Image (cartoon, rainbow, N blue to C red; front, side):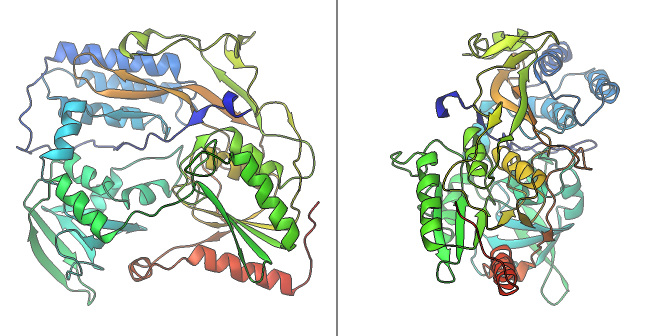
Length: 492
């Protein structure tokens, strides 16, 4: 089953709505590319998306998408640098509202960004429409840490946030999650043409506006400073813990991989069977499933986990298909091969349907089956396979959801296999998924959203810096409260 699964990861490159931005950086001296060649690249990009992306009109109507393509194309009437062209193309790709679809900078420019270009030296966290400074990579415990960022080089911080998009459809928290992690805001500042030295205006903890001028850090130095303050944790892909004398089990899924451990000795399915056997032995009444920060992976593990939580036959995916087996963009995507005929079959609707995927057809519950209370912890980093698992869990009303809206769409996504298309003249990297998933769920009133929490959890900057885990604390309180009211768990 695992070998037949398809890998789905979020592309999570920066996808901005950069309309109206002014690039003034002298950090990169790039040659301009003639408009005619850029028009050719744009046509290749559009053709690839229209041909291959089965969900291109899932969240944006065709007429609106056509207008978006046409408006951008008309602007290619003069030479541009590769970065200027990327800034024109990025909003077009973003308008599809697919978190697996990306347009990335050329590899040469990516290399410069990672080595020689001075980057913004502050790590930020987003809460609502406010941007807070959580770490100063130059000076630990500086007065900036814990303050609210107001502007950088006269560009308001709120304007920067408005130009960022990620996740599926109109999910609300993927942006806040992604931009709050190391590296993403640094790229956002760079994309806006804001360069070192950085004139920062911030609101201190007393509410007073302060000014500071900061020198940028090249990424190797920034990485070193980050790692010194944030030591890497040795983590398994999944683990099980027990709280409250075994009454509460906590199942943490960090990645949906074939194996649960870094040594690749325990398959994910074996890990689940061992975990639910232990849960049964301890007679746990409550299970907390934590998929926060889990951006995806293989398809089958999400369905496998649900199989231990549902005691009747069920459907997980109703259809998985592609527009064709091969596409024109293959000539610009080294290594791209047609979808295999032993797995995909042409049917009457003109699409190629997966006929051997393990998540299709009637699924059976697995033993030992847990019938106690389930609490699902999620946030804006819960994407792809995590979002699929959450949607099925929600559709069957099998859990209480705590945290933030999931980043993936409720009804499915387009991913499966993502081709990396190199546009021949600008060398921009277009990532386009070929396979569209349709989940066995219905009745959710938000066609363009992810699973919404029953209990929304937000953080102040002080709570974030103190390392609080409010979602977990709330889940534990709810579990104890409901158990005190009576009602046990049935584990078969």
